Length: 313
Image (tube, rainbow, N blue to C red; front, top):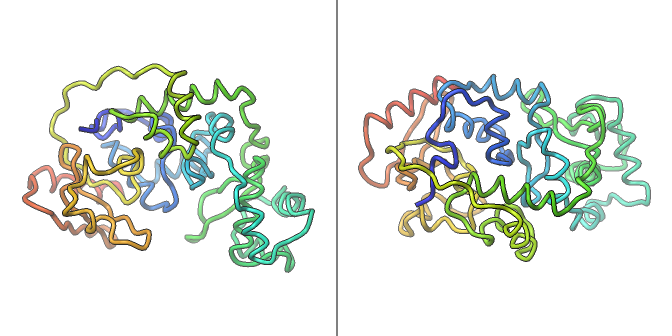
């Protein structure tokens, strides 16, 4: 059974948003509302405003990380994480497909972002004066991010904003030059937050080739085994690290219910976890939470979780 304690789902008291991110190494943040709820599942006291404040304070940063997808990463961890997870695979091809070409693209996006503070995609399109539109703008920002020059700042009116790293963090992100040190740090953090796990799981979570994941694994030491855990009921958001952190979800998701969680089209529904196993899905409109159980669920703990979602929001 996967350890809910290693994933902080037993909700140890007193953890700040930055501490949760550092322990997990990164928190999936493709969808910001879901990412915020991942903090709630791990803290009985944090609020959405607390997490957003850590983002505004630059303690945690929304950036491209494991698997080339957007994550919250602790600002102090960006150099070694960037060294291992940055990738320019397909960026130039995608830019060309969007009609964004030229040998000055990195200079173009760097100049467009620098000194401007957070900009929405619409702001960038205006400043780019026809050089890029639509997804071409996002791919340009991804090119800048690959070179340590761009991250995502807090949203404005529900829209993502992009900012030059020097404006937001004081300097560009410089990748950790000692790759062995970076690999060791990655595997050490991963093993502390994922138990049990294998190098194959690390490769799937990080996006590293399996050979590099095995090297990283060999450089790190096993984390202490988790203690015997009390029963836990949690409403975990879509794309929670507990679902995304291993190669296979088979140990926590009965096959007959898989389509209810993964209906297709890239959709991943929020789940009800009971002692580490997925026992239902849930959703919300505003603060109204509805649960679709697969079988009987512990009523009292589930009611407490529903109430806590309202508290958090």
